[in-house]
Figure 1 (tube, rainbow, N blue to C red):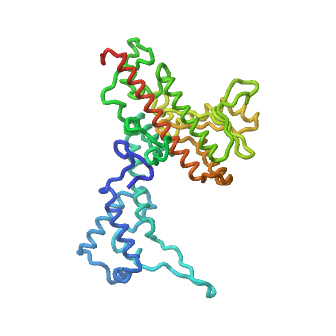
Figure 2 (figure 1 turned 45 degrees about the horizontal axis):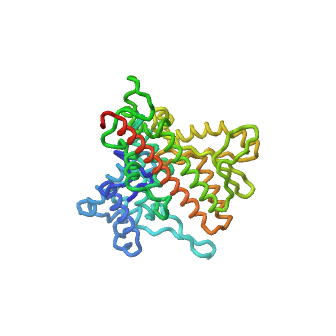
Length: 401
């Protein structure tokens, strides 16, 4: 079962929930559905009577009582948990073993009202509640470890898990095995390689005071703009730009990459000019690392680094865009895959446009395809950057001679 928050609970991984952690939730949910089912409703009807309760020494009572206690420990965070699940077997049967009230007004067709304790998607609701509480508890436990806290938040941001569930239906949504391994290591908080050099041999900072750049930050290569970094970071950026252009055009929009002379009094050029019906959007795409040493403080809130970068881009372009009667979109993606708020708003607008434009591709194919392609492009780009930095270190470092 895949967690809805796509989060590693203990070591940060892929949102996989262990069977042990949800077995009591599954048992209680299946019992509730059975008790309320019309096929077995009569079999449990006697236990819905305060004068004829299920005996407390029976195996059914003991098992149900034990499971209810465990589930309540998992979902108890505030007083609202009592609305999700009764607290003991007697209340359990009383809550679920009754038919939903039916009302009829002036001989009009009867209307079935909502049950106080519905069984539909009960397991889903209980599991999500338990996982969210575990997530909150883990976040609280690593609050003082700013790097780990930033990574966990970045790994659970909207869009951060998209590359994990992307269908490989074209070249843009394929992640090669080596790149996938590096994407997994980044998400798990592991270094790119088991044995790492201490220094970055692309920075050319070989003074005695800066000989431990990689030792201090194992993913230093991801934000090193010197040497290899500037090249591979630019390649990653261009991949995402091309992907956005392609899917915007599939939606029926007109797209220009780095439009010239948009701002007559400035040499500033956004990455994309996208025209959808009567609106003109100017997009400047950026990929930022929330766990880089200079960004960790912003990364202490969900999409905090993306939000900070949006403000930087907005200050740069917004006034010029308004002068051109265009909407400026700071399209920011975090290296873990999280999509900034402004970018999410644009994707929603693109979805509506694709739906209204009636192109060959459905709006679902356009927006979902774009999300998958962007997510995979970012992870492939991350891997290229990390591998290039490592290869340069191995080539130059005397430790690897």
